[in-house]
Length: 193
Image (cartoon, rainbow, N blue to C red; front, side):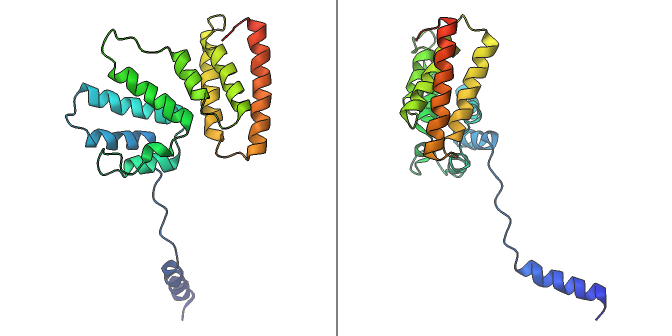
């Protein structure tokens, strides 16, 4: 048998034992497009809902599990429990966004600060609640430049994404340090909740 034939034979045998490639990871955009496909009628509200889902998914770092669950949903009847795969802060931010989307023009919707503090209540440990409240206090303070406030909100989104990746003791340490930093910044800027 020639060397080339042996290589081809070895590759053929080896390819029989390869696992199928993993399914592609569903993006926030793909997940939101799937929801839009399920909505009827496809009016302005349906497109706004799609955009709201994509924004919350991206901003709040929804897990691959959540995105896949929603993207595989055959109907919008919530029987698969996809919403339950969101963390409490992610769920609070989504619910807030949906209330704002469905509010009649001119209706009073609770302030963003209120929604942010509601999201804090879902933090996994008390130190993270303190960290979140400090961040949100600064993010709502007009004494802090807007660019800094935007960075603080992004910082909180990143912290939420890390909750599932860190062991509880390490998470407690990170949140305690963050809470201390936020307390110092809140005092130095004279921002109060």
